[in-house]
Amino acid sequence: QIQLVQSGPELKKPGESVKISCKASGYTFTDYAMHWVKQAPGKGLKWMGWINTYTGKPTYADDFKGRFVFSLEASASTANLQISNLKNEDTATYFCARGYGPDYWGQGVMVTVSS
Amino acid sequence: DIQMTQSPSFLSASVGDRVTINCKASQNINKYLNWYQQKLGEAPKRLIYNTNNLQTGIPSRFSGSGSGTDYTLTISSLQPEDFATYFCLQHNSFPWTFGGGTKLELK
Image (cartoon, rainbow over all chains, first blue to last red):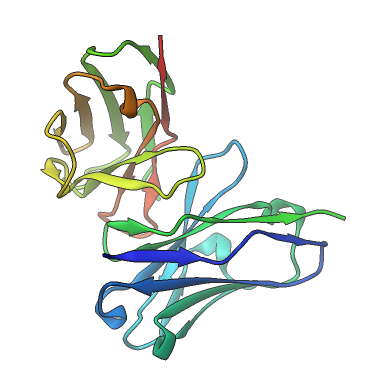
């Protein structure tokens, strides 16, 4: 069955970096784009952008240009999200989601940024 | 960016009730509107895609309708497992945008 399994929760200090992963199984990884979505505590969902899993080309929403990097380990069917120079407002759950109008989502990774 | 206004934010209902949740887009989204269910600590689950297409495995009590800027999710007869948060997503154009969510609670 199709699954997106994300890495575990992270606790970081401001200024640090974090890399979270999304491992896909049950389908051909390069057949579907991977999208990233942010859900801050008590807030709605915000689309961060997507990565073409065939070419590796990332596209970022305006609010996520600069400190956010989408990458792939295609041989491991894994998409990654790296956030550098973490800020308190990066505290959120981050989801990966498959494809156009995503059908399958990961379970989310809670990233807490606190001094 | 397309703004998605979802209503109501909270909905209190009983098992067996028929409920509707609405999403209004700030411009025509050409029926590229999905509905998702989210339970605490779980991955969102796609219920409906492209306005009115039922995701495989989703019960037929869920249905979607709409066009242009106005879209509706209907649950025809609430079941205990339906109490959750629901949100819409427009994927007509980037950046994709979400409705603010509807928390469906047991009355």
